[in-house]
Image 1 (cartoon, helix red, strand yellow):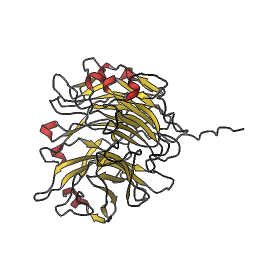
Image 2: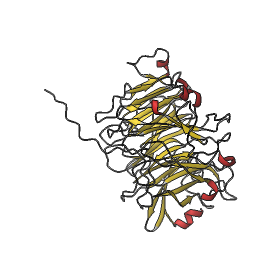
Image 3: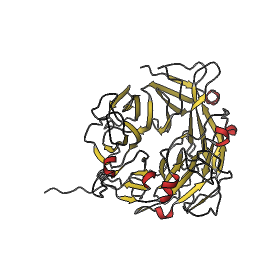
Length: 470
C-alpha cells in the first residue's frame, strides 16, 4: 500500500474525515454529542456524505462531502465541498469512488485538532485543517461496509481508525492501527462465503478503560440460521471472549433472564442515556415495538442483560421498518442523552416514505418512552396526537425519506445538541437537512432548513442528507 500526503488549498477543495473490590474512579464527562470542530473556531461542524454524487465529466469518479460550519446561530452558511478531482488516481482502483460513504471525526495526526475521516468504496481519507490549508492522507482498504470510528482500539496510545468491511459475502473488522497499514480480522471462525453479515455495528467505549469495544448485530446469512447480538471487547481480536447479548432464537421463548430477542429490523445506537458518564448500548426493534438499553459502567457494563426494556410501543411498530437509524445525544443540555430514531419509510398523512423522527428523552433512570415526540415535516407531537407546533417550514412529500440519517451535534456551542435530520428525497432527490436547535425542554422549536442547491450541491440525484457524521 502507498500512503500519499497531498496538500490541497481550501479553494481547490471547495471546487473539486481477602479480595476487595477497588473503588471505581469518577466517571468521565458524558460524551453526549459529537465533537467535530474541524476548522478550530470553537463550533462543531456537520459533515454530509453523498457517495453517489456524479464525478466530473469524462471520469468514473463518484462522491462528494459537504462540511457545513457551525456558529452561534446554527449552521453559518460557510461550507467546504470536497470531491475527487478529474485526475484523481492512487492507491486502488476504487480510490476515487464513493467518497463520503463513511464519516467519522477524531484527532488522527496527533496535533490536538479534530480531523475528518471518510471512507469510500475501497479506501480511507483523513482531511486535516491546518494553517497551510486542508491536507489529505489516503490509504487502501477492502470494500468499506459500516461503522467507521476514530479512537483507541488497543493499549498503544496512538489513534486508530476502525470499521467493518465486506470483501465478499461476509464482513470483517478492519482498521489502521497506530499509524500502520490496513489490516483486517474475521469475526468468528467461519470462512467465506459462510461468514456473518453484520446488519448494525457500534464501535466505541462503554467502560472505563478508554479502549473501544464492538457491539454487532449479525444478520442471518449463508450457513447461519439465526441472527445474534454480540459484545466483543476487542475489534482487533474479535474472537477473544465474545459475549452473546441477544439472538433470534430468544424470540421463540422470551425470558428476561436470558439474551434478548433480535430481529432483522433491530438497529443499534450508542450514547449516555442516563447521564452517568458512560455510553450505553441502545437497540430499537420496530417489528416488536421494543427499546432495550444496556448501561455502560466502569466495570464493563452488564452486557448480558439490558438494564431497561420498553415493549409494545405501537407507534414504533406503525412507523418503523428495516431502514431505521438510531442516534443518541443530549438535546436539552441536562447531561442525559435523548434517543432519536429515524423512520424514513414512515407513511405520513397518506404519503408513503415521507419519513419521521421519534425523540425519546433520557433520564437518570433511563429513557422516558412516555414522553416521546414524533417529528415530521408537518409538525411535532406525542404519538397519536395532532401536532400543535410545526418547526420545519416544509411539508411531507412521498419518498422524502426524512430520518434516513439523523445526528445530534452541538453546532452552537451552548451545551445543547442540535437535532439534525437528513431528508435526502426532498426536491426530487437533491435532498435537504432540517436543523432543529436544542432547547431546555427537549422539544425542538423553529428549524433551519438547509437545501442542496444553495449549499453548492447541484446534482439532481445528490441525495444530500442520506449520510451524515454522527
